[in-house]
Image (tube, rainbow, N blue to C red):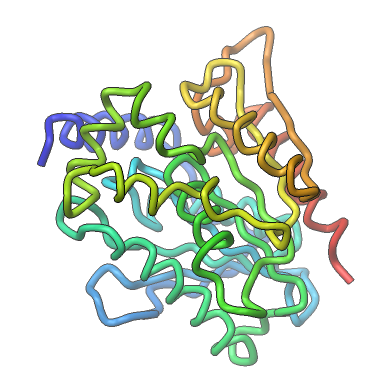
Length: 281
């Protein structure tokens, strides 16, 4: 395990603890916890519902971030329940992390969750005609790569929100020392040129890529990645909405939207859910 991974796990945990301190399950959300979706120990998920929603529910699958080496459904439960309050069933899952599990374990788990949603739609009251997905940071990478390369026919989300993500892996690998260290932990060959090319979403996005809400923020260290994605979407005629969030009072950094008590986080999550609602039949 690289020092970068150790530092990320420690620092992210401290930040997440501070961000979510005092939060509890909202009274207007019901939850079903710790459902197995695959054979690995980490293959568990929660489903959250709005108590006043109508069955079947439009559904959002959330792919968490954490540099491929950190995070789980517990860290994302309050964010995902906040989305559920806006009228969606939300699937919040844990996937296997590097370096304990090398790629493609993470993508295999993303694929398994989509398969689970389709297989269990009747039991969990999911409206598969209105399936959406969100991902941030490494989760935005995994979600965009899923949509571009791994989604089976008929199992693409209707629209996605890609938040503070990394999409051009080759550019990020060249520009960022931290990314090189993370790739050493994520990839079996420690980040060969061939491996980086194979996990680069921009190499696989085609015209059938789902409509996107693409967002970043003024102080997001991955802000340069967003225009690389939108340029690719423009070249293919893929519909998207791009939003650069800013706040004169409080600088907005990486994945600011996970702070559901912040004004900017609320605004972003409102706008992304309204974007999804524009596609609901």
